[in-house]
Length: 239
Image (cartoon, rainbow, N blue to C red; front, top):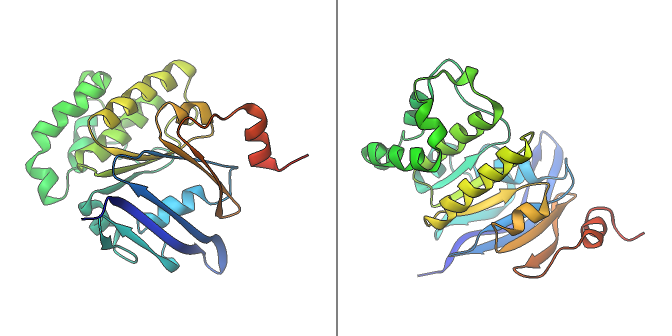
């Protein structure tokens, strides 16, 4: 049995006739947690949307746990355990925290486990337990992000994709969410995380990839170090 969880080969996609991804290739082995960095507008979110089936792949392939999922429907991909927490809050604002979380367990397997899973979610995010009957439209930005990740956990992910989970959060909430993500990783859920803060990613991931102009431009292995000058060079090129 292969130790590769996700294998992406020569993946190309875009919107309409406009290409965004230009042959992205990378893989994630069992036990790895991957971080992605790079300038805004260079393809990171499009990559996640293509992996999730929300944007059709033009060419190339995506293999998850040994199965080719290229072109599969988003619901089918979620049921396999590849679950994407999108950038921004995509919740049902006029449903309660608890109702939104229940909806995360729509597939048969997660639905059977949802009572047990929701207690795990509340253990990771105690604030959600306190606000379980509160409408999501009344929550703070940080609390809504907790619900978003909680909904993904309700689906029992084998690989959890997080697209800028701390965007717009205060330093205190950012640290709180980092600790929660570390706890999720510690429970055995592998992650792929996009963040603009490389130091934040290095506390959670085993490898960093730079995405620029729709392609993987560099890789930094665990313990490789990422000083400020190196970040500037990776983002903007040599002076």
